Image (cartoon, rainbow, N blue to C red; front, side):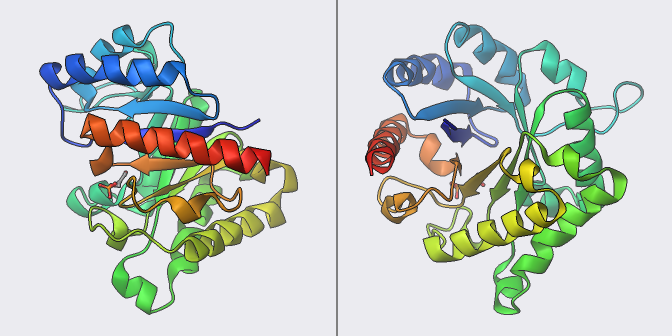
Length: 259
Ligand code: 13P
């Protein structure tokens, strides 16, 4: 059974104090989870420290970025091997905040995707449209362009055991979660596209949703098994809220699995 992957993307937040207080709480709830799998994505500098704290638990580590080079004169960059060295399992790439503030384009992101896979880490590929693109009905084109750009430098097998996170830009940090029917449409569209190239591969892809997920707005997300996880920003930073949210997800998954 695929577990539901809840990734806490802390973005540029956190401190030793925050971590020491909150990892204990996360470890405690993690004990009781049957359907949810937790992953923490802190800033780079805390990955190693958190890795030591979560040893012998099922909580995993996600990096927020990686470079396309393995070594050399690339000041400020971190390689896939370095991430592996410190126990990272997943790497977020293509996040809109990196596309916007660091000018990362689809070709650059594709190179990261291929490299992450080559070194046996799992990419979390974020894709999603702006409000403007949505109005112009470009959602499907945006998603397919990113997938095709990866296919240009690799082949469909590269998507096996990867994660695609649908994160509409207008939903990130805005408090406006996307409508489940629209999320479903996008995920089904991507599934169909990949499945037209290889039927088996699509079954090995996790689909996450990200964008203003919180305790109050996720009810509709559990009517059907379209989504395999959430990528959570703001709501993962206040521990009380985060724990309530995880409990609610777990309860919904329990009900979904019984139905
Ligand atoms: P918010 O949950 O704060 O909207 O952020 C979503 C996100 O960007 C996760 O990667």
